[in-house]
Image (tube, rainbow, N blue to C red; front, side, top):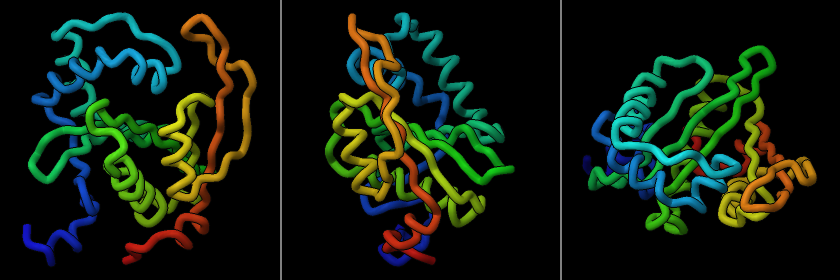
Length: 192
């Protein structure tokens, strides 16, 4: 794509593009499952180990998530085509106009702006295309990268559930963040 088309493609940011998960992504998902601290932060605890077959099955389920009304997962890829993470819209409440986002950037790609780019794309989709009025996110109080990302994009800490998560032999607080459509629009530099 030339520079003019890059600016016009909805699913592309400055550094990455968001795309459907493919069956071929299973190996990246499998390798990521071995990042125990990343898994602990995202899933609020340690999962059981997975096999390559389970990773392939998970990739297949994510491929079909684009058809899911309640939960949709996208791949985050560099312009070279390399998968660097996943981002999901979930808890879509069409009656009240709210949705949630979960994001996972693979370990070796963190702190490069890929998560921020992907988050902005999905927020724009939720607010400007699906007419949601609020997005909610959450994380453990020790997940400094997630907290920094959410605040950078404009999320406001709305609450703290104390000692809500038990993992790694101790209790952790669970932080709740929110961003309204109006707050997002004030910060959106890429308005249509």
